Image (cartoon, rainbow, N blue to C red):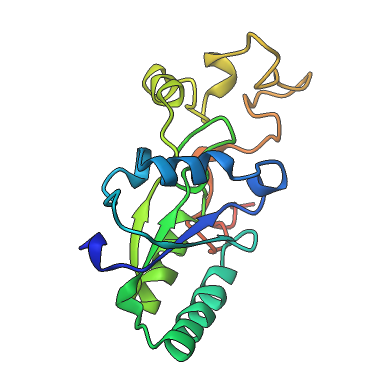
Length: 184
């Protein structure tokens, strides 16, 4: 993908994470052309749009991007080849916000159906990269890896699950598909 031929960068952020995250570090990474934005030319001006996924399972991404594509075509005469979608790190990577989006594959499929170019990651912090290497963000066993500050929390009394929610992340069904019924 030739980023010099793009006019719009659309950053998709997790709706749950956006309840507490202002998006400052994503914007800073873009402005400084670091992390997931390192390949963007520094001397090129882009229009930047931040939008949320709309909540699980991310289906709103299709509606929002379809409307954006149509509006840009109508108002500016630009086709979809001038738009690049960038999935934020809170969606694409293990990090302190949580595990990657369980609907990541589905969101990628929705973007592909619209025919827009897609890239992953925004902020890539050295601290998070180190923690990924150390297995701190191994969410299947995350209470076993790190519990120095009270986060992640210890299991509830009587619970065998390392997860505070009781969810075993290794058994979650593929994006937007019901889990297989458990035999009785």
